[in-house]
Picture (spheres, rainbow, N blue to C red):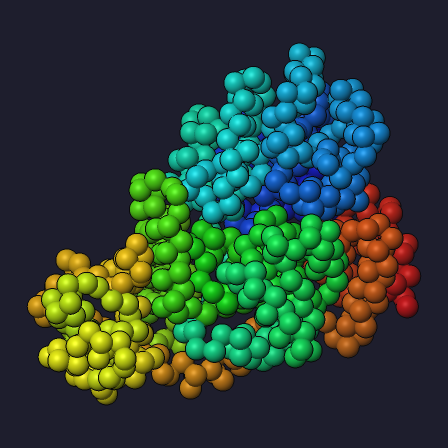
Length: 623
C-alpha cells in the first residue's frame, strides 16, 4: 500500500507538518491532477512535486521528470534527495557519455524516482523517444516544471527553450503536470497558462509575503560607500548578494569590498564559465561570502542563510526585485533587502526598454512594470503593502485605511513630507519655456542648471539665461531637484523620452500640476541620514537573533555541529545546508541529545539521515 504524503514528509524529509497550501497541492498532484503553483522563495515548492513523485512511484506510476533550468541547481537538489534516501538523478552536459548512457538505461527501466533535466534536453527528439517508451508502458508518472515563469515573455527570466514544453501536453496527455514559480504577476501567469496549456489546472497561489525580510530603499548618493556602511554596520561576516547593472561595476564593487576586508566574489556573463562555476560553488559551500553579480546569478539558488540582498542599481521591474530579494532569508530568519536608486537608474532602464528590438506592445508593458518599481521606491507608504498589492493580494488595512507591516523603512521610520507643488511647477514651467524657446527638449541636468541660475556653456549657447524661469529655483539644491524630478516621473506627471536622448517631456498630468489643480506632496530626502543610526540599531538587533535561544553551552554545541557538518559537506561535495540546515543544528544544540532516541522529532532529521549521521551527531554534541 502506498505511503501517505504526511508520512513521507516525516520519514523522508524529517518534518512533522506541512506549510501553507503544501498538503492540498501534494494531495491534488499525487492524485493525478494538473497544478499551477505560485509560492514565494523559501516557501517549500520543491516538496510540492517531490512528495507526489514518491507517492506516485509507490503506486506504480513510474518516473517523475523535473524540468530545471540550471545544472548547479540540479546538482544540489539531487544531492539533497540522495542524502534523504531518495533515488534521484540528473541528466545534463556535466555527465560523461558513459554515465549518461548508464543513466538512460536506468530511466528506461523505470527505476529512478526523479530525473532532473533542462528544457533543451526534455524537448530533444532522442529524449522524447525515451519518454514515449516509458509512456507506452505506463511508467511516466509526472512532469514538474520548475521556474515556470521562464516560459513567459513577460517574465523576468524569459528562456525561449521553455516555450517548446507545450509538447508535454500534446504528446503525453494523461501524464499530470505541475508548474511552479515564485514570481508571476497576472500577465505572466496568464501567459504561463496559455503556453503550458494549463487552462484546466488547479491554481494554488500562496501569499507572496516574506515577513522575515526587511525592505529598505535609499536615495543614491555615493552608492559604494553607502553599501560599505550597510554591510559593516549590519552584516559583518554574513553571507549576502550584491546586484549591479553592469559587468564593470561588478568588478569594481568586488575589488572595493575585498580591499575593505569583506570577502567577495564576482559573477557575470563575461567571466569564463569555469570561474563562474567555481565562484558559485564557493558561495554555496562557504560561510560569510558576498557574491557581487549581475542578474546572470541567482535563479534557483537554494542557500538558506543569505542574510542580505543589496541592489546597488535599480532592477528592471518589481518581479525581478522580488525574485532577487527573495534569495535572502530562505531559512525564515531575519534578513535585509537594501537598494540604492537614483534618477539615472530610471533613465538607463527606460533607454534599454526603448532601444530594445521588441515590439511596441512589449515595450509598453515593460515601461509600466518599471513605473511600478519606481512608485515602490518613491512612495511613502508601506513597501511590503505595495509589493503584495502588485501581485494581487488583498491586504488587511488599519483604521486609517493603511497597511502597516512594521518591518520596512517606511513603517519603521515614516518619511517626512513637504509640499513640493511650488518646486514642481517651477521645474515643469522651465521645461515648457525651454521647449517654446528652442523648439527642442533637453535633459534633466540642463533644466536644473537653468532653474538654479547657473550660466553654463550650454545655457549660454542656447540663450536660456533669458528665459523667465532662469534662477527662480536658486534656493533648491541639486539633490532636492533630482528628488522632485524622480517623484514627478514616479507619479506620472513627467515623462522621459529615451528615443530623444533621455529628454524630459510634459504630459497631460504635467498640465494639471502647472495649473495648480494638483497638490504635489513629496518625501524629504535630507532626513534619511539623520535617521540612519536609528534604523541601523533596529535592523541589527533583528538580524542577529537566528540562534538567540541558545545558552553558552548550546552555542558551543552548535559550533561543534557546524564544524562537523562542514567536514561531511566537503567529503560529499555538497553545500553544508544540504546535509542539515542551521535550524536543525540549532534544534539539536538546544536538545543536547545523549542517545539516538533523543534525536526523534528533530525537524529536518529524516529516517535516512538519522541512520547515516545519528551517531556522528551525538559525538559532535559530546565534543
